[in-house]
Image (cartoon, rainbow, N blue to C red; front, side, top):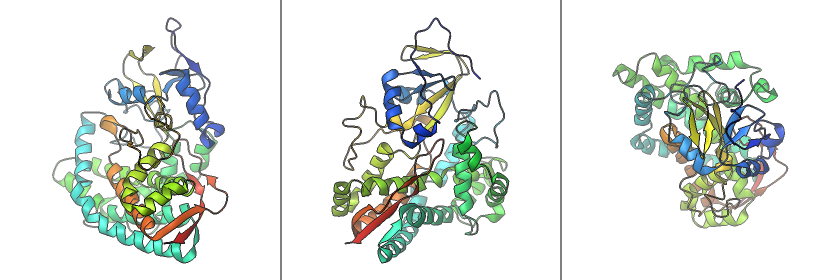
Length: 402
């Protein structure tokens, strides 16, 4: 446990617990408390710094030399404890090693590759919307978000179809582990060994389809751009970060649009707003709610002094509704100028898969907007509690054909 700051500095203190059940179920009142407490706040429950403000979060993400990722992007400090899995070569790494690896993955996720994937995504979205319209009432998570993402994303990586549900379980473990050793993490880890074993076999070269994005990472290793030891761990990064986040993004999109019928009417009238609608969802109901950085030296943000090797909690969901940054931040408006939201992170560690997530969701929302005149909730929803992600376990909706 880290020591509290020295008494010679004045600093706000808050007892907000970002991993409590109450916070995870409804974080927005707590976000308000965090923002009002100050630009940088000492979170007494976890002996770490935190911010819920956009300006300070942006400043921290822009300075990876002072606020690093290599010590872990969760509450665990890898300087002091061993992680439960090998650290990510992208998410939990810093320059110069991070720069080389990110360049390889960036090339694999190039605009040219994404253009080639669009037709496959469109075909799957069209078939899925057809099935939705035949039924009229579906669960937006289990009948739309999960089957769509578990089809198009693993297909693009080059995975076979057997056992893909393990990707959801693995993602839940990874993102719950950003938080403390609480009941939520323990519940997600109940089947850890079989899931981890399945993942470890699937990112090996021999189990990836030729021509897929995963195989292209190995091609880069053959060319000497990364090592043969790094290649499988980079492919694992796709599998751990590219499913749960986008499933939640699709589910949150459909919840926002079902509960804001005027916004769905705008989208139905102009399906080209699909990309803008998704950006507003990522701002308004951020699938990725928080993560951490670790100080590498004594430093200061907003006049608050912080010591070396202290954790800093960054509340994405709060920064995305910071009234100092956004006009009418608690309103959902798909035509908002939302450039600058923090939903995909920022700085050198901004989400490298954000363009494929945008494409997946844009294609689906466009097809739905074109063929569905109205969407509404059809029953009570159930949250999917996770220490880092925000989304739904069940989300019943009813649709009416255009």
